[in-house]
Length: 131
Image 1 (cartoon, rainbow, N blue to C red):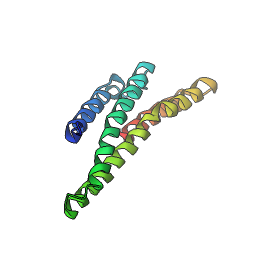
Image 2 (cartoon, one colour):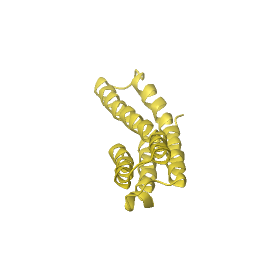
Image 3 (cartoon, helix red, strand yellow):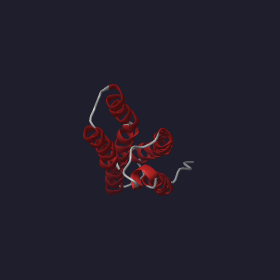
Image 4 (tube, rainbow, N blue to C red):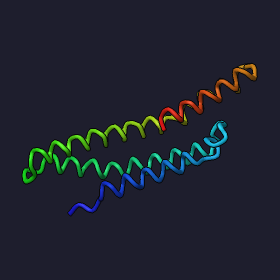
């Protein structure tokens, strides 16, 4: 018997991403701290784990010969949306490497404060675009 409830999982993922949105760095438009990046990483990994359980649910339902074609079509559409969500979370998880690259730029090059501010703005933009 399948115990995972898709809508409960999606609600949990939404709540987890709300935690990320409420991080101080998002509210003050500053660069995420190392702790924030670790939290983001942990949340995204947890969400991917939870969503992977739903992936098997969609596969099982898609191959279920006892349900109608219209229901299978709906399951396919939900599966497409589900895969898009997973893809966005994978992208979001790559933020830490993007941020690290920009920090390396800041600390290894003799940049003006304007350029540093632009890089900080770029980091926040990366995060918001994925959110």
